[in-house]
Image (tube, rainbow, N blue to C red; front, side, top):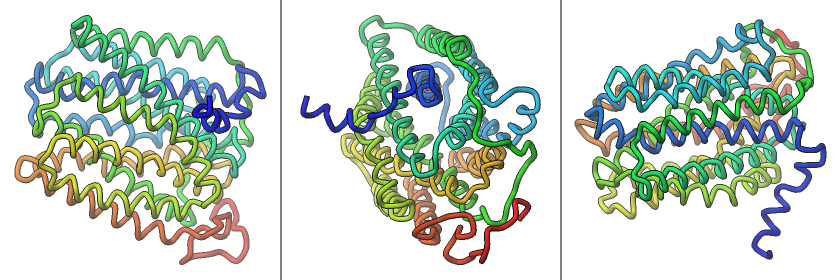
Length: 411
């Protein structure tokens, strides 16, 4: 019980409004994303290599295609002319589940490309809506705490997913096709529950349903762009290296992901509280300094267990990235949150669309160079994070450009 008390304190107040509350729905959305995506991702490298004969070139192309819906996330403002934000989030969840369920039935290069785009379309629209709704349903000072809880819920869902995948593979010797199918159908079931089990919640303000670009958000856009580029190296090539260089099988990759989840369940809410106490700038500086070291170490690691340790450390540093969302919430016009969430996802994925394919060719020449490029991107992010003010607010967005008074919404 002593070990559980700190964890329970991090979750104090979650059920104050009952289980049919906005915060519980946010936690459900947060848990649903890894339920589908992690089941897809943990098998991807083995499935693509063993059944679709992928090399670094094909995996790079697939990951670039996976990011195309993220690049088009700005179109969410047009979707919201048809559906309300909460409704559109539920529909996106169902589409994501459909894409995962179909994956195992198309074990070819083009088949895997096709099902990946379906899955990714639902994933990125849901992630955009999850971010926008979290900002609108949460007070700015409490947003890091709520985002930390959502990250912990996602880790818990990942833990359950990886555990079930491991049992399916090692105990029941289940074929990849049925693991994908069961995971996808389960996610579609969660979408049905989210539709019928929760009322429609009101957002905090009227939302501007047009594409919004503001010069006073430039630092937020830059941080998102660098985050998207850097994240691709971790997501695409770190795990791929485990399989190609160190010959990890699907069960070993699943166990590695399980360790990450166990640690994240405990640490993610604490990261949110840390950002609330420290502020966004120190948290991001810590993240980027750590990532520079981790990516540099990736480039030269020659021992399998050391690479696995770096993967776990890498994952922990990325938890601090919620500080970018917290920074934006403090400087944002509340009416522009939904639109800017879509735009920021697009900016985040500009590099993500082309970078994996390009680095796939670099990988064939030098895997170490791919990770050194990641270290350079982390260094660029570090320089940008130093421009965040100690107390960011509307009119005090960066240390190099400040408006003397609160700008007009059109600025």
